[in-house]
Amino acid sequence: MSSASSLVASRSAALATHLSASGWWYWSHGMPALRMFFVLPLSGCSSSLQPAQAHLHSFLKLPIPISSEEQRKIGVIAASAGNHALALAWHGKQMGIPVTVLMPTLAPLAKVSRCRAFGANVVIHGANIGEAKLLAETDPEFAGLQYINGYDDPEIVAGAGTMGLEILEQLPEADFVVIPCGGAGLLAGSALAIKTLKPTCRVIGVEPKRCASFLAALEAGEPVAAPTTPTLADGLAVPTVGGNAFLVAREYADDIEQVGEHEIALAMLRLIESEKLVVEGGGAAGLAAILPGGPLHQEVQGKRVVVPLCGGNIDTTTLGRVIDRGLAADERLVRFVAQVSDQPGGIAGLTKLLADEGGSIKDIYHERAWLQTSISNVQAKVILETTGKEHAERIKAKLEEKYAICWQPTTALDNEDPIDVYSHESEPAQPKVSACHEWCEW
Image 1 (cartoon, rainbow, N blue to C red):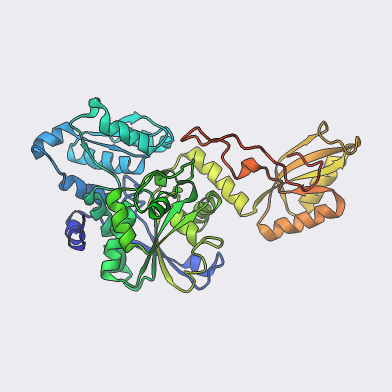
Image 2 (spheres, rainbow, N blue to C red):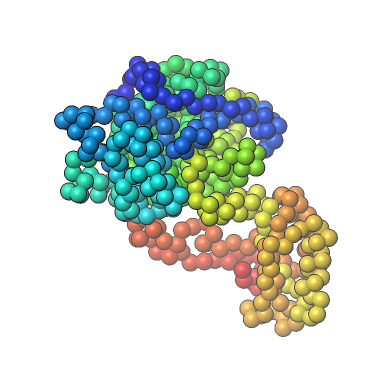
């Protein structure tokens, strides 16, 4: 497996990434004692989850069974949800090497279209990267193509480790490095480099709760398939971590944490608003872990923390939904149901109160059929824009003075997947309305 010396040697093929200190996070977001530094490998043409130097290093050191020229003509193949495929396609085009990528059906359209634009042969197959990888390795159609594992090839891990070298070159006093973890290649390479040069620096991996494959491997003592459901961090949705990467990361990384979907969405929103950066869910996972409410928030206070923002590939339509979910997690979008008079002016009174309190109605709907308590009332269902939690609570208090309301009603489907689209084995969840009032039906 890769050694620290091979990481240093790979620097000859590396494209430098840079740290950017964020003064905004120093003064805001409930972290006045935290010094935040972002690694920004987002400006390259591939905008890849894995640093571009990892793939370039792999190309330069391909384990070719016959000859370099013959393998170049035959080409390479990989399975990827998008980021590894993008980097592979980009460098393959630059070096004249044919590239075939197998992408699961969950791969974002933006990643698929960019791979094709870079000249790759894109094959869509399987519900997850594991099924795509199985086809790539077993289908006779792809015989002869050199498989490039995006997170477990020693050359890929070594190339990813150059990011760790560059972090300590630019910030030798770093206390924490918080790294997104999918197949564990980036975590393994970076942790090896950082802990070799500065053992006191803590290296923490972060994976989505909906695909906690590294945690599953730790519990089993070896890589195993983890339960996987759709996640905003699609680039980290690798059901089974790489065997090589796991052995290295288990040895050198200090800990692994998990983050939920609302934490990822909120981190993406914070980066858009505070740093003017569009970062995909997998790239924002590290930040999600240290925001207020995240598993590392208290631990990193007063420390110098480096967070790689590694991945900017996201569909525009998905970005819009993520922003809405981030606003909802931040209580800048709230929803409620209110009983109002079914007489002329009933709805007008409600909307006037909201306007007087500075709320902006994004959506409103009223219905009569399902309210059984009074024939003279209707339910008004409202989605409201606010300036934040305090503003929302102030509006709620004013509403409760005049109306019977059900504030932020939820169902079981709000936080659970009714069907696991990867396995198709889960039973549909039964929705349960929150018990604000018996009449409340969102």
